[in-house]
Image (cartoon, rainbow, N blue to C red; front, side, top):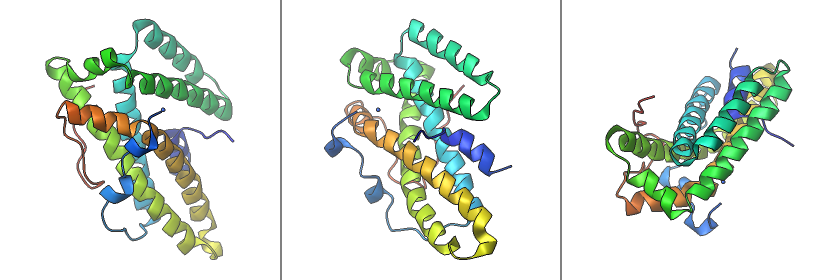
Length: 214
């Protein structure tokens, strides 16, 4: 079953490949298990995590993609945003994001493109470093959200007054898990690259995001 992008699902609710051994141990980095959050807190954190991963992956992709690839994707995205049917639009945007994720994963395994992420100059390198940091931070938040979401589902189940909230949590939890799967596929390559270039990485989900100049 196709998943809609997390950012789209959140709006409705609220009004890539490296060896597994290299993947970040997100659970270990989040520290002690956290208590289930309130529904609004869960949704707000999920929105933040989605934004971090989406913005960061887009910046990293643009830093490594060819001009032809960027122009093609941007044209496809513009066309997709003009689709009136919500489900069709979401499915097309999902397809576009999957293409970008695949291209970014390949770039992280290419020495020349790795250099584009570690040997840029000035403000561009600062933004890339922040994007690498924020991408991993979004994954850490996703890991924590999965635990919190599972706890919320348990606490909300069985009370008819919570049916609406339970549905929201389940929907967003599914999208969080989908995003987390994507993050873990390239997290090892990102942390290996960051380590070799001495780029700071977050150690817990509670750390503050890095500012990125748009």
